[in-house]
Length: 110
Length: 112
Image 1 (tube, rainbow over the protein chains, first blue to last red):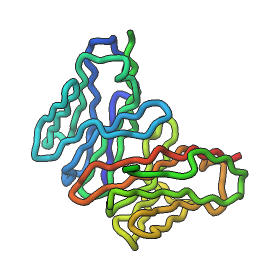
Image 2: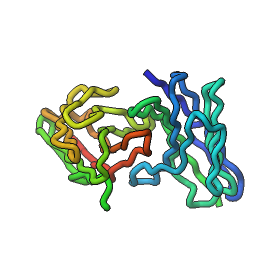
Image 3: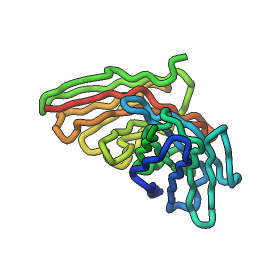
Image 4: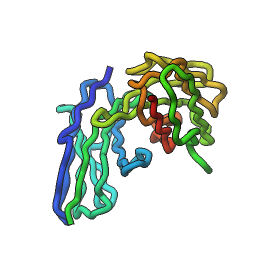
């Protein structure tokens, strides 16, 4: 089955700086890569996703890049704000069953 | 449009008690999932149902059973609760064609 590794496990950034989270996957057949944000005590919510036929996707301050050859994908958050503090999960799938990374706790320092 | 609804939101059980967690979605999604979330371990798949009438084991199925009652509802049952099953349980659903997975608000379950 698919195995997704996520790094780092914790990330502390100064407000206004950028944050980068990296994930690797094992199954070369995986073709859909979503990212979820989970605030304390809340449900995971999709923030951005990318499919295997696309190398990069942006949505305002958030971007995701995918390198199929190396089997890794990354989340980039620019101009971080206090409300970006949360746990972020990457995931990968080639069908209807997502495999999740262990999560990255992001803390934005004021 | 409620999305994915889970009940109850909180529950405390004694070891050995049984419990059914309920999940319903109103998005006409085919696939439904049960995850557990423990600190530092992300989301681990317990069981899933790719379509009405089918269920399959995920990564951590031991101690659980599921029922896909109809297209809308997917329940998770703990027959004899153990302290190791203390966790936050999330139900999720997914439409066809790789549509984003939608999560419920979670059930916080404590087993004493």
